[in-house]
Image (tube, rainbow over all chains, first blue to last red; front, side, top):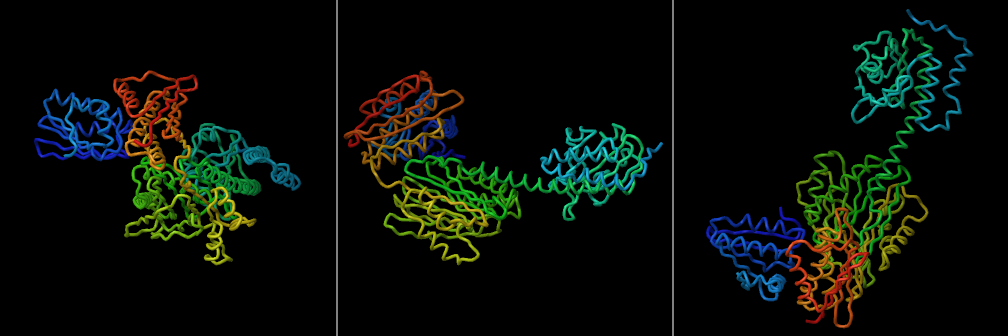
Length: 109
Length: 531
């Protein structure tokens, strides 16, 4: 069950996984989001994309989740791509915190 | 050997009767009265023990309630099943029983057997033909109880029954009042942009009933407003009401569709409390969109006063009450509620009077609900519809007023310092910023900056005892000033993502100031509204 305010759905075609997050990511649900993302990616996954287009709020707690994920996927040699349109709340925070320096960010899926 | 009690004179009997009907006993509290009567009966009948067991109707057990001679019975909470043993037989047959042989076949209570009771006499406590309990006496020496003894003990039993009956109804009434009082919110929640006032008046006939109202913020930031009415009166209705209220709260925090919530509450009621019935109305008010979603289970529709001066009863799809089997899915009516409107919810006790047509009463309510402060609306509704006549049925009334649109007026909100508070806090701040004309980028930036500060307060300001986080916002020139404060002890943030939090606050605002003092910490954020 998703906690209030957040939905995480994952779709996989074997090699690649698309994870769509909708709602607000904060202190109350970051652990849940992290758990859902990790559960959706297996060691057979070649590359993962996380769509943050419908994320209406995210702050440093959400960034911590994404930074840690980026590090772990790099070690596991699994590709990671984030989707966040220009001007979206997620894009703003990703750019301020420098996550765009370690992960590819694209405006749409 | 049998203890022979000499036959006594008529004057002695009269004195004995006097002793147990003595007016001096009248002022005693019930517990003292029972003890005093047991002492006197022990003396008159020269018995070593005397005890009262009262019937617990829910379990059909007799429970030791007062005892003299062998008090352990009460302390140990002795329970005798109806129909079994000495006391159980008296209660089941509603007749006196004399026992001249005490052992495990005749007496269930081991305390009496162990203490060497040899003979016993017991009589039922009767009220209007119903058994309330049992009064019995016992002797350590074998004793033959006479018909006069039985008669005297029955006299005492009648006195005890009378006192107990009034105690049971007093206790029920007091418990129902206490329950009702504990369940109605003493202080209505503080919600930004919404004023609330409420009234509850118990009915004259049987005191409190099953009316209730409830207002709480949902995790999504929407406001949930509930009004309900359990069929029936007194303690039982109040207990069912309490269960419905918490069931509804429990379902509402995971599901903010009012029809789904009522369906789940209904299912729980029919499963665990079959035979109970209630009406209920659930309003989910999205303060960002100014929209109401309402589902009603047989409950009268709210009255709304609009800013244009008109007042109408909302047109709702009304579904069956809770507790009534129905295959049809419950429905939701969606309405928009303009800012400045006043919403009035009530129970039927307010509008139903046997002597006045229902529509006339609704007209009176329509006239009383105006665009005024909720306290004033409550006062004029009660004045108009109740006046000086104590209502027969209980009445609950809740008035909600949506603050008028005054964009940019100073605003503040205090919430418990916990993660679940953050989302409603941001919902309220987002609304304020949008109303005040902030650009899309300014809304995003100030929400993140304030969110970081509030999140930091939730994580670091307080120990496990918790505290409050307050947020205020106002306009200064072309800037918005948002203050996030706590009254806790400053603690250096732990974990490396906190450094990122400070960076985000600086990058999303024109100025960040953190003021730490013995009173707490205040983070002041300034940012231009127009870019």
